[in-house]
Image 1 (cartoon, rainbow, N blue to C red):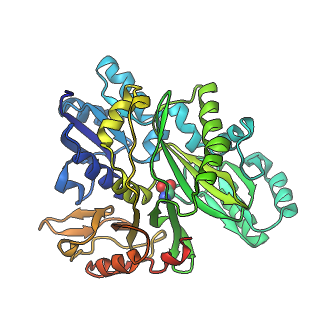
Image 2 (cartoon, rainbow, N blue to C red):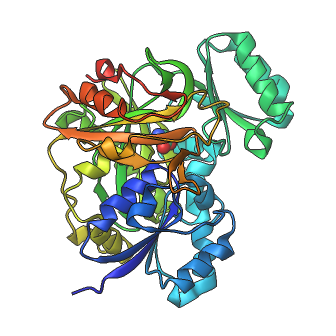
Image 3 (cartoon, rainbow, N blue to C red):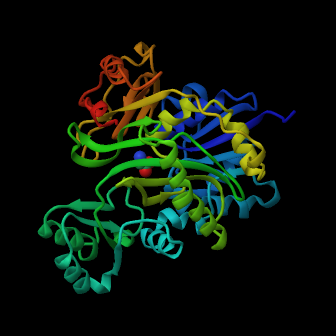
Length: 429
Ligand code: GLY
């Protein structure tokens, strides 16, 4: 019998609340710490205020609270090398770590690397060209000869602002200017990928890796547009559903054969394998799976609806992954459907105000509620603290009726400027 353990989750979003919720159900868990967390995680875990860029403070938390397993939620610390830092500092006494090294996180941290990796390993993806800041004229020429819509991707991490799709050449040139000339994304925008626009159905596919073998998590669709009708700005995600309704057995077999297996084989060949989650940002084009991007973590808000569909003990799976014993574990999925609806602050993903009181949290009795941009004020009341504030999640036999039910639950929550999508059901086929 394995001893019960202290788990540290790094991050403060809905994804991290959902991870804490699922891990807290494990008999292997004795206590969860979330750093920095939100007001939802404080109900099931101990929040620890720290800056995720300050790796030494993370090490101090690991030492102080005798942490045995760390799950890294967001991409920034992964790409900046948090796992390497912890391993290097604590050597043999380092906890089990769920997240890649900095070297492997380049799959998410550099779009240029990811596209070239796909090309090297014959993984289906959109045709593309790479330009750096010194090649502004060549990039301009290429844009002028390209067909609209124009897809321009900044190389580095950009908090969701790095991928721009436009139908007008003049706007595409403005995007290029903003990256190369105005430096709006700093170093992240010093190289760009300009790629062919793919028309199709987007979806997300997740695997848990142990460095040698892997297990499949429930799949999901993420609804990125801020407004109904798939209008408005592209966000980190305003809703998600799981599983992907069009992921038939044949299509999944093809996805595994054409994308997942060659990606993992390529990672092994290039020494990029790791312990953690790999998220394939996918699109189905004429029945064919094509890769839009790789992420080296779970998605948000996808996690909020995939974890309620996971029957297995997540903490046991994470321990197995850390010990390279995943091949003898089973990842069991519940054969139901889940939907997560994000309640956001008006103005998100651009300018929005925070600090508004949130009421109605206790009235959510018929759905799961995951916090994201929330915190507790001096009077111990929930307050908005971010763009994506909460997500309500419901699980049903199928998708029929889930959205109206979630909207009814969402209506119980009040804060100034609350916005959410009300039409995603019509995009699920
Ligand atoms: N929902 C998109 C992401 O997590 O990257």
